[in-house]
Figure 1 (tube, rainbow over the protein chains, first blue to last red):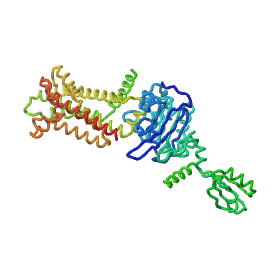
Figure 2 (cartoon, rainbow over the protein chains, first blue to last red):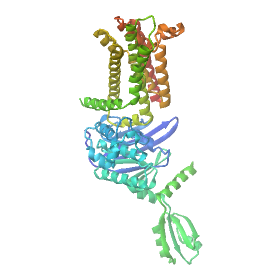
Figure 3 (tube, helix red, strand yellow):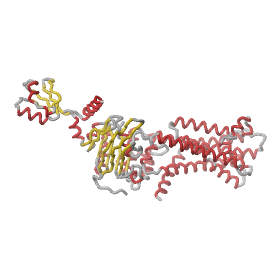
Figure 4 (tube, rainbow over the protein chains, first blue to last red):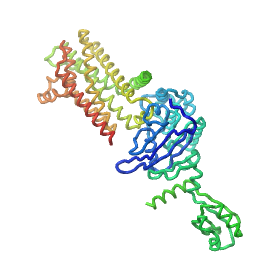
Length: 308
Length: 249
């Protein structure tokens, strides 16, 4: 048995690179996932998210660097007894009913969850449990794949694009259950290209782009770092004279008039406001606007494309 | 010790899948028995053989035909399916050792072969009252069980294919081609000489010949054992080589 304390590293990537035919799908990536955390690997399609997950699951070997799960090689039996995964594009074997598939997979683990608990957490109905597993619809199959991921009562859960193809209700149910698992001390690592999901669910976001981690931290911090904040107000003063009052240190990127309001785009809305007050600029109806993570995300991707 | 529990679990579920597989029931049991009825009751055998000998001979042909089909089709096609649908990859994430997965597949395969032998032998006894000494029944059954190994190796080779459609087409083609050229449907003696020349080198011919010899109270000839072992070795080497190449890619 691998004994661990909360906060211990459960997954470590050290300078990991994966090359496919000369192209670097994952490029010099390092990070550590701590026990009991919920982490999102966020990025556009082809950013290297699934490749990173594959290496953590031992399905692919890194071309360079090292991947450790629970301090061991991901392929080791002890590790596999403590992880669960929802992979993309998994269809179950034929000739078995849903309940039987769950029973089979449960049986592989030394300390599985009780059957009724798997059923409750996955939300599979008694009718669905009796159905042939291969005959289930897309949404039902996702529930089954989730049931299989948690069947072994694993410490570390990998969800690769878990909510693709689910409707809003099913998506909310899924994340509520995931949060319950996290409250029990499970470590959850998921990939998504739904920015809202990463923002809502994760305590930490690893932002992937073109095989690299380009940002790593609290979703709020990442947002603050990435999003354009704007300050707008109505004023009788001329925009040019206001511009002259603001020092470079505030990181003003734009100042313009729209719909009779003066807009100032800046890294530091608080600092800008205090300067404007100090200078006695008359302002009415002050608003601070923040772009969504979605906007930040597309902005960031565009910036990177332009840089290349 | 823990692996014993896993082997039992995996075998139990694989058996469940087997009995629910309609293709197995049709191709491996119904078809050979139907052929047996047609060629021993409706169409009388070749004049060269007496009826009793022909009925025992053709019973062996059909049992060999059935087991060969199960070996090629029921191993290879599901392997391709499980990989194409992502199931095989998922299994690598679970703690089930690959060896247990393989053992369970081989176990179920053996059970199917044994079931085919018992069912078709019984059908021969019931339909034509085929009578042989107990040692002949047992040793022909054992021969068919053991000599199916090269065909399991063909199944494993087909199991390496990428697409289910290709695997299905190739295995059907091989199955029927081997049955025809090996003299399982019509005796070799009844075929044109060029077909006989080809048939002599077919594994299916040597598979059948061993069982036919036993019905004549003879031991299977060494040449059959040598040829079948040779085919087995070649197919195993080939699939090992291809798998290595696929993993490297």
